[in-house]
Figure 1: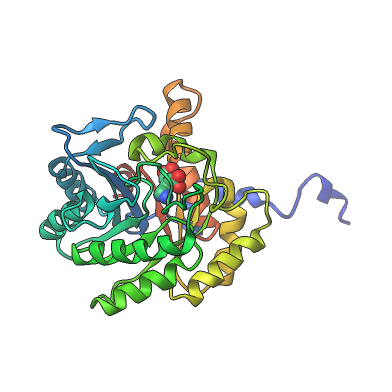
Figure 2: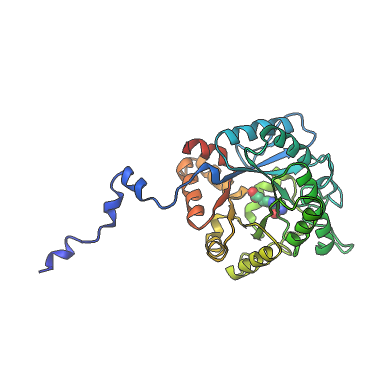
Length: 331
Ligand code: PBG
C-alpha cells in the first residue's frame, strides 16, 4: 500500500538544507574574491578624497588615496580594478581622456608602478566624464552624437590608456563599431596584446544615477537613449550587440546593469565562449545601502545574495563597489 505517501513524502528537498555544512557542500554557486572587480574614481585637482553622497563608502580619490585603496583591494584578493577619471577641465572633444598627462593616465602609471602585474588594471574607455556636454561621444553641429567621429577619439583614448599601463581597456560608450576601431588603434601602436572588455549590452538605465554624481558625467542636455539599449527590447538585441563586438575582436563582454538584467546575462552566458562580466552599478549599490541604513534589509546578506544571483545567472566576473569588503568576508 502507498496510502502513507501523502503523509510521508518520499521526495524531501529539505534534507539537503538541514545544516550549514550540508548547504555548503551542495552550493553550486560560490563567490570568490578573484572574480570581483572594484570600480574606482580618481579626480584631478582635489586636495583630499571626496565622499560621494549617494554612494556611502565610495569616494572620488586623489592619486595618493587611490593608490592606498587599490593596494588594499589587491591585498584583500580582489581580482581587478576598473578606473574612471574626472578631469579638472572639460571640453567639446573630451581632450583629457587621451592626454598623456590626463588624470586616468597618471593614475594608471602610479598603480602600475605600485602593483605591477599583481592585479588587472582596467580603464573605462568613454568620453562622458571628459566632455563639457557630458555625452559619450563628439557632437555634430546639430547636437547629435557623431558615431564615426567618436570612433577615432576612442582609438586615441585606448592607446593613451595602454601606453600608461592599462592591462585591459573597457569601452562603455555604446558607439557602433567601437571595438573594431579600438582594436585597430591598439594594434598599430604596439598594443596587440591588450585585451578589450566590451560593455556590449549596456542599457539606458536609471540605475546609473549615483554614478553620475561620482563621475560628474551627466549629459547637460538630452539623455543616452539614442545610443544605450532600450530595456523594453528583448534579450535578442543584447545578443546582437554581443555578436557584433565579438566579430570586431572583443576578448570579453559585459552586461550592465546586473540585477535587473539577469535574464539577459543568462542568454549571453549561454551564447558565447568568452568570459562574461556583469556590472552591479551605482544604483544597485545605493538601493541596498539606503535600505540597510534604515534597517529595512540586512546589508551583508543582501550584498551576498545579489552577488551570488549575478554569478548564478552566468557572470564569470562581477564589477561591484563592494568588492574589497566582500573579499574580506570571503577570506
Ligand atoms: C560611462 C559609464 C557609466 C557607467 C559606467 N561607465 C554611466 C553612463 O553610461 O551613464 C555607470 C556605472 C554605474 O552606474 O555604476 N559611459
